Length: 279
Image 1 (spheres, rainbow, N blue to C red):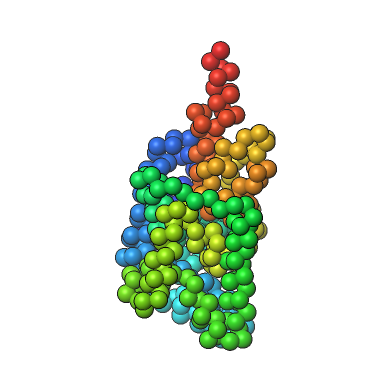
Image 2 (tube, helix red, strand yellow):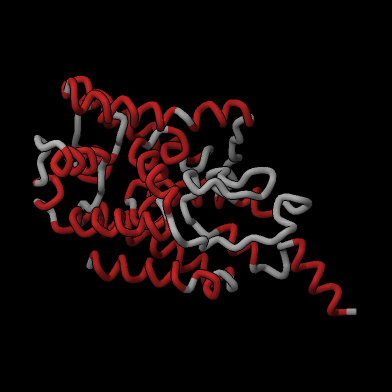
């Protein structure tokens, strides 16, 4: 099941330029995968990777003292973990964060639902958004440091991740953990992917490692950013700068910008081309 899921997502990325040309087909496929990963791979199989897995892997490989059991004890965690590490060098954090993370997909489903029923989305001011984006990197640094010098303190920061409470334990957890996880899910109704954007230490770590990716899978035009900002408006994490450049460490690979890029009815440069041909 996990290999099938990974294969489907890999095919989406490999043929992304073709798939995103049909907005309706892509939207259906996207929502189907979001449901599949969150409900089946997440709630049913418990395939949720945590920052704890990667910290233990790092400690085991480089300094000893970590436990590889956290990686090998569950086959789905091992498979997702290896695929995530390998994919960093091709698509950055996009494969896992945008498509294979059960909590991330659950957040996006809630955002889609909230938009469908007309809940107004909250957009933070640029300076506030810019400040909050660094919180996840601070959390990652604290977790990394204290995991080596004081594990009790590190465990405190590990609790910022709602993965175990929401996905693994299905909210059968201490009251404080349930309240925290519920808050993070509810805030997604007004701020899409809130936890991914501002608080996820795992996403921060994958984003940093993903800077070394060798594939440039997101297509751009010379008009992107100046004068066209259509893609900027559809990016759920605000990863596209006003200049049109995509900050790959913040990109979740949702491919929404590529749907816009290929849309002859909504992408301004393509609309201009279509009108020119009609005359």
